[in-house]
Amino acid sequence: MSFNEPDSLIRLENVSKVFKTQAGDFSALKDINLSFEAGEFVSIMGKSGSGKSTLINMITGIDHPTSGTVYIGDARITGMKEGQLAVWRGRNLGVVFQFFQLLPTLSVLENTMLPMDLCHMYVPAERESRALDLLAMVGLKEEAEKLPAALSGGQQQIAAIARSLANDPPIIVADEPTGNLDSRTAEHILEIFASLAERGKTILIVTHDPSLAQHTRRQVLIADGELINEYVAQALPMLSYPEMLKVTKTVAQCSFEPGSTIAPDVERDSGLFLVTQGQVEVLSTGPKNTTQVLAKLQPGQHFSLLDPNEIREASLEYRAWLHGPVDVLWLSGKALKQLLSEAPKAASALRQAAFGRNLQALPIGLDSRESRLHV
Image (cartoon, rainbow, N blue to C red; front, side, top):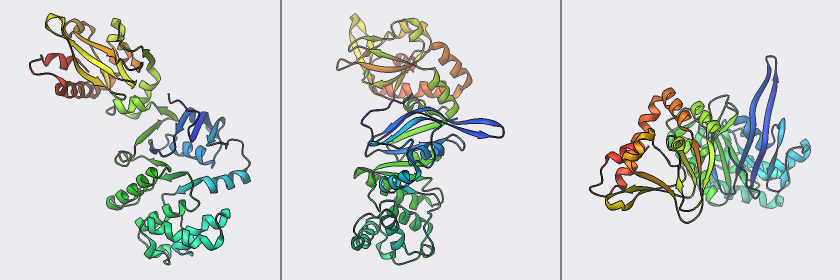
């Protein structure tokens, strides 16, 4: 349930990938629509076999979709001939492998220069100085003349990052770049990636490690070849990936005009709302019908009343802000109750998160019972 922007740097439109196996067809990707902007620092997460590596192979052109189209900038890479694709990839993508893939008989400097030589980029006389500048940028200039075997694993990975930047590509793709490194070196590498994103590079990191993903500015989750809605993942992190995917498939999109009341009927009141655009004001009606704003919910936050009979007691109202329309994803009351029965930890987590949020917003003297009803 991700939507492409026409001006995005990377766009996948209705991409599916089916592998032929002896056991029959296997759908590794199912109708993926996804986009990335220039300068984004993104982690692509999923369990082993979820489809994340296949997804990256679509973006890099290493593999081709069974159906759908991949665009990178102005280039439609789907359908490119292999020779064209190799040239395009060398000039537009930098790839960082988990196991470095440095040529053992070449020095670190020569490894860094290699993409320039292969793609005939830059004047030959300039390539060495450019490579040295890149090594200096990542802190390896003093190791330039050494062979890869003389470096630590972390240094080799940093050298691989410098090599990926040789042709100044707009996109860097890293496959489990910290999987074999200690935490301190991994932190340093993530700092390098963050710095590159600040300079306008688009950084895509494939990982199964949630702690690594927390360092990126955006997380894309994939399960069973399908994308988990990013707002579902952000609002309901206590759920497992299969549970998130189930919610993704169940939610409906709703829009509300500025200032309008959200959840006007009992069926909607009993469900769960995930804010995706705009703000939702949480209002409480007090003595003499005075109205007080308890909280303002931002995109990625959620609200609901699990029991519609509690609405009158709580006197809570949810209103779209006045500065523009509000978009939400709505999980019906029936679907929410089923989810909570299948994932009992979710009910407690939803209530605790809402209680903490509302408790901070409650004015002194307001009955905290109301905040306990708001999940």
